[in-house]
Length: 91
Image (cartoon, one colour):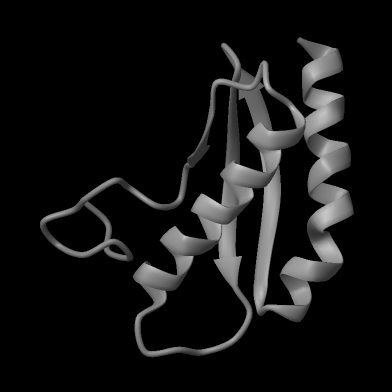
């Protein structure tokens, strides 16, 4: 799995300038069972941070899976799929 982790890290590094220009950031945490676990964040203020963060995650996943087909998916560990209290509040 180290090779897959290295390839995902290299692709994220390749995307970094584009993400930064768009006001986003992505950090690879690890790759487990073919799932890349990342932290995504926004570097600019905005009205709907959750929506933009989810769009950012979706774009990162699409780019990674296009170039690395054996990657099963991308999980943003700091963005729950849904939350009753709000995505940025502790459970």
